[in-house]
Image (cartoon, rainbow, N blue to C red; front, side, top):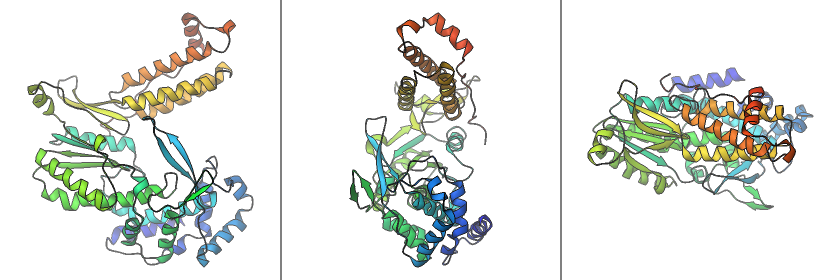
Length: 432
C-alpha cells in the first residue's frame, strides 16, 4: 500500500497539473490495517468508548464491515466529543476527541491527501509535514533574519484558525487536485460530523476539529492556497525589495526589506483572510523594526529594538562574541510560566510516591523540555526552568510529613544521590 501511495505522490510531483479522479479505492482493508497498526492506543476514546484494543479483538470482521460501508457510501462518522483545554491566557482551547473507527478512516484519508498535495507545498511551510518541524522552521527563519536584508518583521496571528476553516473553500481547494467523489464525500462528512458537548449535539458549519487525525493536512492545504501560494505567486513579484515567509500550521512570520512593502502586504493580508472566512488577531499582529540595522535606527529614536514571539521563543536582536549582529532566542515568558505551573502541579500530585520514582518522572519532564527549548543561546532559560523545578520539589517534599522535612543542606545532599537532569543545548539554529 505504501508503494501505491508513493506512486501517487510521484505522479503528482511529475505532473503539476494532474487531477486525480479515481483514488478513493486506495482506502481499503489493507490501508486501514496499516493505519490500525500505526495508531496510538493510549489516546482518549470517543463517544462510543471503544479503544484500539477492543476494536482489534475482532479486527478482520470490523475492517470488512467498515470497508463494506465505505463502498456502499453508508459510512457516516460519529460526532466528536469536545473537551476544553486551558490556555496560558486563562481561556480554553476546544479539543475534539473522535471514535476509534473514525480515527482509522481519518488516518487513511490523511495519507491519500498527503500523497497528492505534499509535492506541491512550498518550502515556506514547516508544520505537520514529513521531515520538518519547529526547529527547522526556526533555522529557516534565522537565515531570513541574519543573512537576508531584513529590516521589518510582520508577526501575525490568525484568530481561531482551526475553528473558522470554511468548509466550502476547503473542499474546493481539495477538488483542485482530487475530483474523486468518494474522497470528497469523506472529506465533507468528516468536516460536518458534528460535536457532542454536555450531551448536546452541535452541527459543525465551519472549522476542522483540533484532535482530528486529518485536520493538520486539511489546515495545510487551506494555508497553502490562502496564504503561501498567494504570497509567492501574487504578492512577492510586486515588492520592491526582499521578502520572506515562514509558516508553521496557523502561525507565521513575514520578513521585509522595505516598510512600504510590509505595510502594503499587511493591508492586502487582512482583506485576503476576510475573503476566506479568517480574521487576524489585531492585538497579536504587529509590524516591527527588526534586523541588523534596527538597533541603530532605534537608538536614534531613544529605544531598543522590539522583539517577537514565534513557536514558543522570544526572538530578539543581539550580537555574537565577535560583535557582529545576531538574532538570539529565549523561552517566551508565557510558555515558561505555563510550564512551571504544570510541573508544580505534577510534583504536588506525585509527592507521596517514592523519591526515586519522583526524580525519574521529573527527569523525563526536564529532558523533554530541554529537547524542545534547548536551542542556541537559550541555556539561561533552561537553567532557570531547572531552578524552578528544584524549588517546587523542595516545597512539596517538605509537605509530605513534618517529621521528614528537608533543610536546604539535606535537600542538596539528596539531589547528589538522586540528581536532576542538567540543561543541555540539543539544537543549533545554524544547522540546516
